[in-house]
Image (cartoon, rainbow, N blue to C red; front, side, top):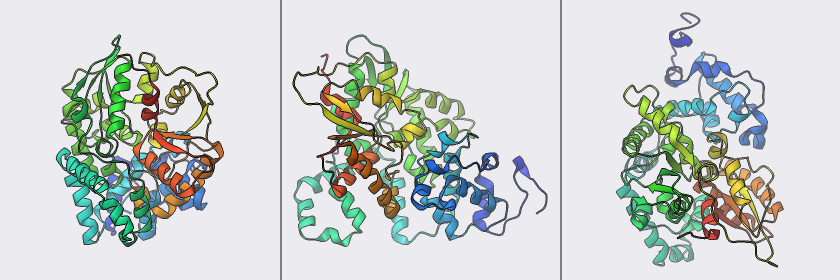
Length: 454
């Protein structure tokens, strides 16, 4: 060591290991040293819960990050494996008495790992295609939606399954293919236009963030979101030039691409005279609300990023706190109540602090009995594309989740994030609850039961 500390309080070490040098450059050393190793994060962490291993906990991962930066360990393959095993659910953050920004640390670490990764040619092509050519471009997404729709509707899907072709794919990918919802090349703008007026007394102006995969696989949910907002008294803008939020990029180490997408979105939404930027996907909303952190080092975008982040809100929170009351179908005499339960979106709960509003809305719907599921606040194992790249751990987490889901005997499993929704559909398919259960986005459930004021 040249001296105990260098620039910004970081160790003044000349690392021979390239990854260690990059970690020293990128990691927020103040956050590393803020961890008191108290262990409050341990019971909140899904991977620690499954393994019981210290390195698979937030505290353990932070200790490894700091040891690598301090030159006490070489960040080897085991280091990378433990970092990649993290779901990024951020359940550790609300549990942390020192307010350690673990989400920022794990993304900085994954960025460093990605810079030194040696991907195989197929993986390189796939990452480049998805992160640079599909997710950021609306035209590519429409083409993807149209292609998937053709596959689903033309008989090709049935043919692929009947021929046994799906057995050529890894089991977890074949399982995911079986529960994919109907895709479409027509998103919310194609269906509703770029402006949708408020019904009744206007209470505010909102701009909807439509997402990328959300608008291809769940375009109907986007439409229902706009209609709920309108019924609650909001003028709704849906800017067509918006792009992917960048969450999948950030979680996969492609931070610079995430920043580029954030800048485009800020420029697009800043042109509108709006009170709120509304998300209906917890995973998207969690990054949108942290655009100010993502661009804090950018002098040109820092203030606009703060403007953007301050306006981001989940649709359920906005409906509960600012909207006119929605009208739902009234109680029908003699009709048996339908049991419903809810799986929290980790990022909506842990980052956007939006656990309360969905439950308030669900309890307003007549002819329903809300059953709180045990560990509803624990990750389901979806976590963006985690269930694709870490299928074994995701499957173990999902199996435990479905034990609790089955115990509710609910007819509806509701959630507020597309990834969670697909994961719960998969869980129902694989674990076949005794009570017939249907997974559904909260927005769709509410819209289905809302009385229109038109």
